[in-house]
Image 1 (tube, rainbow, N blue to C red):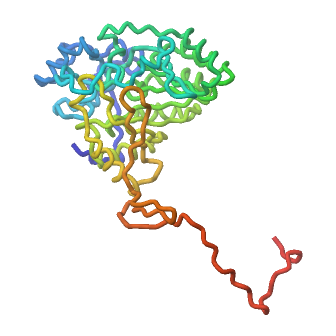
Image 2: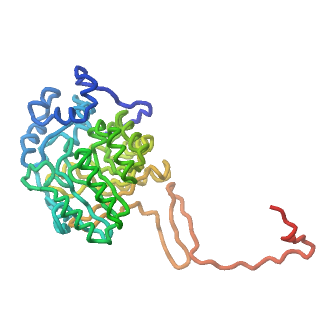
Image 3: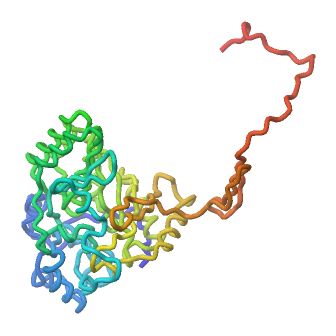
Length: 399
């Protein structure tokens, strides 16, 4: 369903939890302890569809149900097609495995030299440091691992991972992910960051996290001080729909930005959530207002039980085409497919080029008008100035 942007509205408040003291509500540990994790708990707050009830029954074998009270407030409880609801409440489609879908769709296990570390690209590694999240996205790429519902038995090996990075000088970039790294305690997170900062060849430390979206209360002054101490630490958050861009998320992003954390956003193209240009434009505009640069728009990975979220790639290209030229370039994410089996991210762009020859490039702009850019440089005849022309003496020129 297309989203009509209300530029002034920022959702804020305790919603269903008005009875809870503000001190508890704003405590990220309280939010975690009071997550909705069962069918009975969820039915206290909304009437579920048959499809959702069956999905929740299956979730214990695929990816656990967990929703923070804060994020549950963003769900339209009267609308089964609510784009926030679709992302976190299981549906029966998760039990259907379609052709091409695999538990490890990106071939991460094949590129894992030590447990919890993925070394696919030449100069960077993915460091998986936890299998837990504040809430569980139903389209999760690592649903085989996250929440351990599939008995993947993942145990992060911090020391093995750190020793591997220390012994490989080609690694200049480390991405902390999981699960969600920001669920670690301040003490553990500071230990990891300090160890990485001590490795001379590590130039870039990044964190991939949806905690600011699911649990903005976690972005505390103490956490921001850690980022200041070991920065620059880059962070990619994960917002899929404008409804997720709340006052609390805006304030969390403000705290991170002022702590020196550059912020980008990675969205996943999802059917019924953000698969139309109007919704995507509203989303990217909101992100920029929160100091977040739209970075990637992912075609959904081929995880098992994800086909009900799948969007035609041609639709994704049309969404990018609808953004290009109609909003600032800062607002346009790079649409990518993470190649199945471990081929890495491949950009997918609208085709503006009509022809390339040795003489010229012929292309269309966002309005569909044709332009030509010459590939050759043919010098034109030099025009000799008239003998009566005054040629300034450089010695007499003034600045």
